[in-house]
Length: 82
Image 1 (tube, one colour):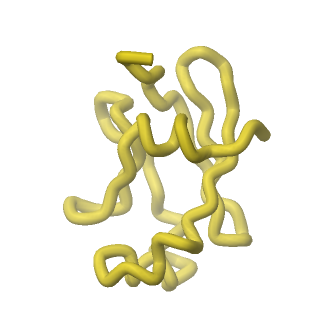
Image 2: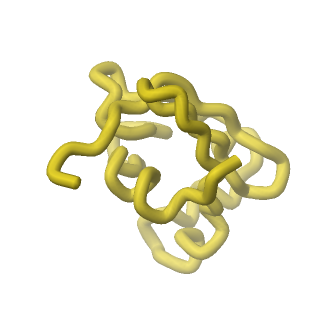
């Protein structure tokens, strides 16, 4: 697949996972826990911060702030069908 569908919505779940709905209607669950071993993603360990996840303004992934984001391709490829 050359182009991945854009993200339509995202919801933070209690188990350090996010539920991502794509513009195609496909919904996938993405586990963020393995990312938290990496220094860049350590702030996601804070539950309040984790819940602040939003869709990128153009739908090209999800963002927490200017430094922490995940691309739609990562979410599509490694997310599990919900």
